[in-house]
Length: 301
Image (cartoon, rainbow, N blue to C red; front, side, top):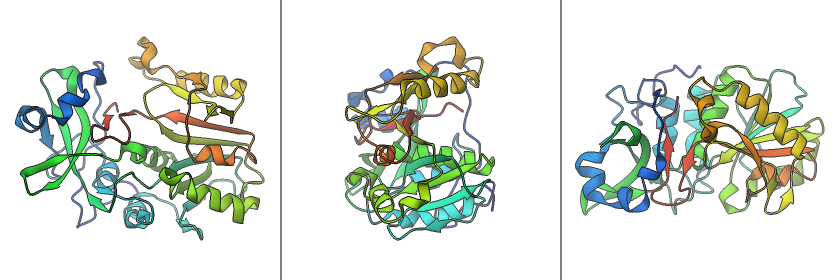
């Protein structure tokens, strides 16, 4: 079933595509104090996305953001993935979800992860900022239920790495060829990627490059993680140039959106593949304040 399929009945999904603006998004206006302050958040700044209005977010992204899934709870997402990803999904012995698009012996692997940093399985209310200026509109953040507030209290929205999942869904449904890996346990040190490398390294014998979508900010191609080289500078620069060539006219006007190589990465699953895959990078995908209650993502369609 394609991404335009009806939303799951137990999770109201919205119908609009990602909202697109022609004005800059200034995430600095959403500092910790601002988002965590309930008077600002719930008395003028916050609009809860209910799934009824034509809210500015894709239904797949809305559904996966609506539930926090720590390690060992990732399969709660499987019905949503089956509904919106138009390819047959497979699950390995560690719980990683994967599939191949195009050539049965792909040379490119795309990577993201399905776990979040929530302490337990957590229903998440999705909010969008509504002001006071256009530059501070349409940031997405989360709240959880609380007996102290009818609106709940701010919580991690799970943009790390729901945004990566969303990007890979769009790539797969556009039939971009490659091996698609949705990992479990990344937030616990890459449990899923470590397991599949240990038990079935032959799956990656033809893979020449691994591209992960799991980095904060807008414009980094991470070539080093934890001080270790995972990709050559030459590959990183070439990938950055290729991405920049496809940027919108508006994005090209600001260096904020132009990808550059960086050696400042920490960890994502692509690091675990570095011993067996020549070029392993991690790309910025537009979330900020990862792992915090102030975590948020941009709606730059």
